[in-house]
Length: 276
Image 1: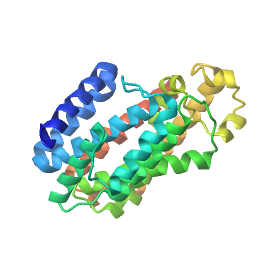
Image 2: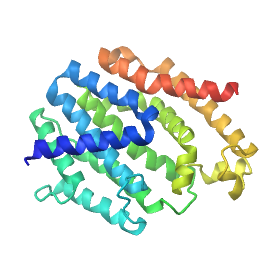
Image 3: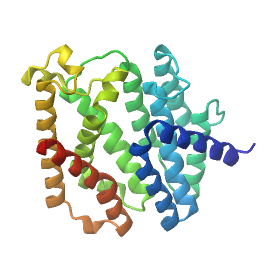
Protein backbone atom coordinates (compact mmCIF):
# COMPACT_ATOMS: atom_id res chain seq x y z
CA UNK A 1 0.00 0.00 0.00
CA UNK A 2 1.52 3.33 -1.07
CA UNK A 3 1.37 6.55 0.98
CA UNK A 4 -1.66 7.99 -0.81
CA UNK A 5 -3.67 4.77 -0.42
CA UNK A 6 -2.72 4.45 3.24
CA UNK A 7 -3.69 8.04 4.02
CA UNK A 8 -7.02 7.70 2.16
CA UNK A 9 -7.85 4.69 4.32
CA UNK A 10 -6.83 6.49 7.50
CA UNK A 11 -8.96 9.51 6.67
CA UNK A 12 -12.02 7.35 6.10
CA UNK A 13 -11.48 5.72 9.50
CA UNK A 14 -11.15 9.12 11.21
CA UNK A 15 -14.21 10.48 9.37
CA UNK A 16 -16.31 7.48 10.42
CA UNK A 17 -15.19 7.85 14.01
CA UNK A 18 -16.06 11.55 14.06
CA UNK A 19 -19.53 10.97 12.64
CA UNK A 20 -20.28 8.02 14.90
CA UNK A 21 -19.34 9.89 18.07
CA UNK A 22 -20.37 13.51 17.27
CA UNK A 23 -22.36 13.57 14.05
CA UNK A 24 -24.16 16.86 14.69
CA UNK A 25 -20.92 18.52 15.79
CA UNK A 26 -18.83 17.61 12.74
CA UNK A 27 -21.25 16.99 9.87
CA UNK A 28 -21.37 20.64 8.72
CA UNK A 29 -17.60 21.07 8.92
CA UNK A 30 -16.94 17.91 6.90
CA UNK A 31 -19.25 19.25 4.21
CA UNK A 32 -17.24 22.47 4.22
CA UNK A 33 -14.07 20.49 3.50
CA UNK A 34 -15.70 18.91 0.45
CA UNK A 35 -16.92 22.30 -0.76
CA UNK A 36 -13.43 23.77 -0.46
CA UNK A 37 -12.00 20.94 -2.56
CA UNK A 38 -14.64 21.60 -5.24
CA UNK A 39 -13.71 25.29 -5.54
CA UNK A 40 -9.96 25.17 -4.91
CA UNK A 41 -8.91 21.97 -6.70
CA UNK A 42 -7.85 18.51 -5.61
CA UNK A 43 -4.34 19.25 -4.30
CA UNK A 44 -5.21 22.25 -2.11
CA UNK A 45 -8.48 20.63 -1.07
CA UNK A 46 -6.77 17.38 -0.11
CA UNK A 47 -4.16 19.35 1.86
CA UNK A 48 -6.84 21.10 3.93
CA UNK A 49 -8.69 17.84 4.53
CA UNK A 50 -5.59 15.81 5.39
CA UNK A 51 -4.17 18.49 7.68
CA UNK A 52 -7.47 18.73 9.52
CA UNK A 53 -7.73 14.94 9.92
CA UNK A 54 -4.11 14.80 11.09
CA UNK A 55 -4.72 17.26 13.91
CA UNK A 56 -8.11 15.74 14.76
CA UNK A 57 -6.43 12.33 15.06
CA UNK A 58 -3.59 13.59 17.28
CA UNK A 59 -5.98 15.69 19.40
CA UNK A 60 -8.23 12.68 20.01
CA UNK A 61 -5.26 10.63 21.17
CA UNK A 62 -4.07 13.46 23.41
CA UNK A 63 -7.42 13.78 25.19
CA UNK A 64 -8.41 10.10 25.08
CA UNK A 65 -11.29 10.44 22.61
CA UNK A 66 -9.65 7.99 20.21
CA UNK A 67 -11.16 4.49 20.61
CA UNK A 68 -7.64 3.03 20.90
CA UNK A 69 -7.21 5.22 24.00
CA UNK A 70 -3.50 5.38 24.75
CA UNK A 71 -2.83 5.31 28.53
CA UNK A 72 -2.67 8.80 30.03
CA UNK A 73 0.96 8.52 31.11
CA UNK A 74 2.08 7.69 27.54
CA UNK A 75 0.28 10.53 25.74
CA UNK A 76 2.83 13.36 26.28
CA UNK A 77 5.61 11.16 24.87
CA UNK A 78 3.38 10.28 21.91
CA UNK A 79 2.98 13.99 21.08
CA UNK A 80 6.71 14.55 21.56
CA UNK A 81 7.45 11.90 18.92
CA UNK A 82 5.10 13.66 16.52
CA UNK A 83 6.89 16.97 17.24
CA UNK A 84 10.23 15.33 16.46
CA UNK A 85 8.81 13.93 13.23
CA UNK A 86 8.04 17.46 11.98
CA UNK A 87 11.75 18.21 11.63
CA UNK A 88 12.90 14.66 10.84
CA UNK A 89 10.23 13.03 8.68
CA UNK A 90 12.27 10.20 7.19
CA UNK A 91 10.89 7.18 9.04
CA UNK A 92 7.14 7.29 9.78
CA UNK A 93 6.15 5.03 12.68
CA UNK A 94 2.55 5.97 13.40
CA UNK A 95 -0.68 6.77 11.53
CA UNK A 96 -0.17 10.44 12.39
CA UNK A 97 3.29 10.35 10.80
CA UNK A 98 1.86 9.08 7.52
CA UNK A 99 -0.82 11.77 7.56
CA UNK A 100 1.82 14.40 8.29
CA UNK A 101 4.11 13.13 5.55
CA UNK A 102 1.24 13.36 3.06
CA UNK A 103 0.54 16.93 4.18
CA UNK A 104 4.17 17.91 3.70
CA UNK A 105 4.22 16.35 0.23
CA UNK A 106 1.06 18.20 -0.81
CA UNK A 107 2.33 21.47 0.69
CA UNK A 108 5.57 21.12 -1.25
CA UNK A 109 3.61 20.86 -4.49
CA UNK A 110 1.97 24.19 -3.64
CA UNK A 111 5.22 25.78 -2.46
CA UNK A 112 3.89 26.08 1.10
CA UNK A 113 5.62 25.44 4.41
CA UNK A 114 3.67 24.48 7.55
CA UNK A 115 6.58 23.68 9.86
CA UNK A 116 6.03 26.56 12.28
CA UNK A 117 2.24 26.18 12.38
CA UNK A 118 2.46 22.42 12.88
CA UNK A 119 4.91 22.81 15.76
CA UNK A 120 2.67 25.42 17.39
CA UNK A 121 -0.42 23.19 17.19
CA UNK A 122 1.45 20.11 18.42
CA UNK A 123 2.98 22.03 21.33
CA UNK A 124 -0.54 23.04 22.33
CA UNK A 125 -1.75 19.44 22.06
CA UNK A 126 1.22 18.40 24.22
CA UNK A 127 -0.08 20.83 26.86
CA UNK A 128 -3.47 19.07 26.68
CA UNK A 129 -1.88 15.62 26.83
CA UNK A 130 -0.04 16.66 29.98
CA UNK A 131 -3.16 17.93 31.77
CA UNK A 132 -5.88 15.49 30.63
CA UNK A 133 -7.53 13.58 33.46
CA UNK A 134 -5.90 15.72 36.14
CA UNK A 135 -8.48 18.49 36.61
CA UNK A 136 -5.69 21.04 36.95
CA UNK A 137 -6.60 24.71 37.14
CA UNK A 138 -4.49 27.21 35.21
CA UNK A 139 -4.24 30.97 35.24
CA UNK A 140 -5.79 33.15 32.57
CA UNK A 141 -2.38 33.89 31.03
CA UNK A 142 -1.45 30.19 30.88
CA UNK A 143 -4.68 29.25 29.10
CA UNK A 144 -4.44 32.30 26.82
CA UNK A 145 -0.95 31.29 25.68
CA UNK A 146 -2.09 27.71 25.10
CA UNK A 147 -5.03 28.78 22.93
CA UNK A 148 -2.98 31.43 21.13
CA UNK A 149 -0.57 28.75 19.90
CA UNK A 150 -3.43 26.44 18.98
CA UNK A 151 -6.00 28.79 17.46
CA UNK A 152 -4.05 31.77 16.11
CA UNK A 153 -0.38 31.08 15.47
CA UNK A 154 -1.18 27.50 14.54
CA UNK A 155 -4.61 26.91 13.02
CA UNK A 156 -5.36 30.42 11.71
CA UNK A 157 -1.98 30.89 10.01
CA UNK A 158 -2.11 27.42 8.45
CA UNK A 159 -5.65 27.96 7.17
CA UNK A 160 -4.76 31.34 5.68
CA UNK A 161 -1.93 29.76 3.71
CA UNK A 162 -4.19 27.01 2.38
CA UNK A 163 -6.89 29.57 1.49
CA UNK A 164 -4.37 31.55 -0.63
CA UNK A 165 -4.25 34.37 1.90
CA UNK A 166 -1.31 36.22 3.40
CA UNK A 167 -0.65 34.55 6.81
CA UNK A 168 0.23 37.96 8.24
CA UNK A 169 -3.51 38.64 8.16
CA UNK A 170 -3.80 36.48 11.27
CA UNK A 171 -3.87 39.67 13.37
CA UNK A 172 -7.13 40.65 11.64
CA UNK A 173 -8.72 37.42 12.83
CA UNK A 174 -7.59 37.31 16.44
CA UNK A 175 -10.89 38.59 17.86
CA UNK A 176 -12.83 36.03 15.82
CA UNK A 177 -10.46 33.25 16.88
CA UNK A 178 -10.79 34.16 20.55
CA UNK A 179 -14.58 34.32 20.30
CA UNK A 180 -14.61 30.93 18.59
CA UNK A 181 -12.48 29.49 21.40
CA UNK A 182 -14.96 30.77 23.99
CA UNK A 183 -17.73 29.10 21.95
CA UNK A 184 -15.87 25.77 21.78
CA UNK A 185 -15.08 25.81 25.50
CA UNK A 186 -18.69 26.51 26.45
CA UNK A 187 -20.20 24.12 23.91
CA UNK A 188 -17.88 21.29 24.95
CA UNK A 189 -17.92 22.08 28.68
CA UNK A 190 -19.40 18.78 29.86
CA UNK A 191 -17.24 16.73 27.52
CA UNK A 192 -14.07 18.52 28.63
CA UNK A 193 -14.90 18.15 32.32
CA UNK A 194 -15.51 14.44 31.71
CA UNK A 195 -12.02 14.16 30.22
CA UNK A 196 -10.45 16.03 33.12
CA UNK A 197 -9.95 19.39 31.37
CA UNK A 198 -10.77 22.64 33.16
CA UNK A 199 -10.75 25.57 30.73
CA UNK A 200 -11.94 28.00 33.36
CA UNK A 201 -9.10 30.25 34.56
CA UNK A 202 -8.22 30.46 38.25
CA UNK A 203 -9.07 34.17 38.29
CA UNK A 204 -12.64 33.47 37.13
CA UNK A 205 -13.07 30.68 39.67
CA UNK A 206 -12.19 33.20 42.40
CA UNK A 207 -14.22 36.07 40.95
CA UNK A 208 -17.38 34.00 40.49
CA UNK A 209 -16.80 32.01 43.73
CA UNK A 210 -17.07 28.70 41.92
CA UNK A 211 -16.44 25.68 44.14
CA UNK A 212 -14.67 22.51 43.04
CA UNK A 213 -18.01 20.70 43.12
CA UNK A 214 -19.73 23.43 41.11
CA UNK A 215 -17.11 23.16 38.34
CA UNK A 216 -18.34 19.62 37.64
CA UNK A 217 -21.93 20.81 37.10
CA UNK A 218 -22.61 23.07 34.11
CA UNK A 219 -26.07 23.82 35.53
CA UNK A 220 -24.84 25.07 38.91
CA UNK A 221 -25.74 28.76 39.51
CA UNK A 222 -22.14 29.95 39.72
CA UNK A 223 -21.08 28.14 36.53
CA UNK A 224 -24.17 29.38 34.69
CA UNK A 225 -23.31 32.94 35.72
CA UNK A 226 -19.77 32.45 34.38
CA UNK A 227 -21.11 31.00 31.11
CA UNK A 228 -23.34 34.03 30.63
CA UNK A 229 -20.40 36.36 31.27
CA UNK A 230 -18.25 34.43 28.80
CA UNK A 231 -21.05 34.58 26.22
CA UNK A 232 -21.24 38.35 26.63
CA UNK A 233 -17.46 38.57 26.22
CA UNK A 234 -17.69 36.40 23.12
CA UNK A 235 -20.32 38.69 21.59
CA UNK A 236 -18.15 41.72 22.32
CA UNK A 237 -15.23 40.09 20.51
CA UNK A 238 -17.47 39.27 17.53
CA UNK A 239 -18.77 42.84 17.42
CA UNK A 240 -15.23 44.21 17.53
CA UNK A 241 -14.18 41.80 14.78
CA UNK A 242 -17.13 42.86 12.63
CA UNK A 243 -16.51 46.57 13.26
CA UNK A 244 -12.72 46.70 12.99
CA UNK A 245 -11.84 44.00 10.47
CA UNK A 246 -11.99 44.88 6.79
CA UNK A 247 -13.22 41.53 5.48
CA UNK A 248 -12.93 42.82 1.92
CA UNK A 249 -9.22 42.10 2.20
CA UNK A 250 -10.05 38.38 2.02
CA UNK A 251 -11.07 36.32 -0.97
CA UNK A 252 -14.76 35.45 -1.32
CA UNK A 253 -14.35 31.80 -0.27
CA UNK A 254 -12.42 32.90 2.82
CA UNK A 255 -15.11 35.41 3.77
CA UNK A 256 -17.86 32.81 3.37
CA UNK A 257 -15.92 30.30 5.49
CA UNK A 258 -15.28 32.84 8.24
CA UNK A 259 -18.99 33.72 8.35
CA UNK A 260 -20.54 30.25 8.02
CA UNK A 261 -18.06 28.13 9.97
CA UNK A 262 -16.88 30.50 12.71
CA UNK A 263 -18.78 33.78 13.15
CA UNK A 264 -22.31 32.44 12.62
CA UNK A 265 -22.25 29.40 14.93
CA UNK A 266 -20.50 31.31 17.73
CA UNK A 267 -22.92 34.24 17.58
CA UNK A 268 -25.99 31.98 17.57
CA UNK A 269 -24.68 30.07 20.58
CA UNK A 270 -23.89 33.18 22.62
CA UNK A 271 -27.27 34.75 21.86
CA UNK A 272 -29.06 31.54 22.83
CA UNK A 273 -27.23 31.43 26.17
CA UNK A 274 -28.04 35.06 26.96
CA UNK A 275 -31.72 34.64 26.06
CA UNK A 276 -32.15 31.60 28.32
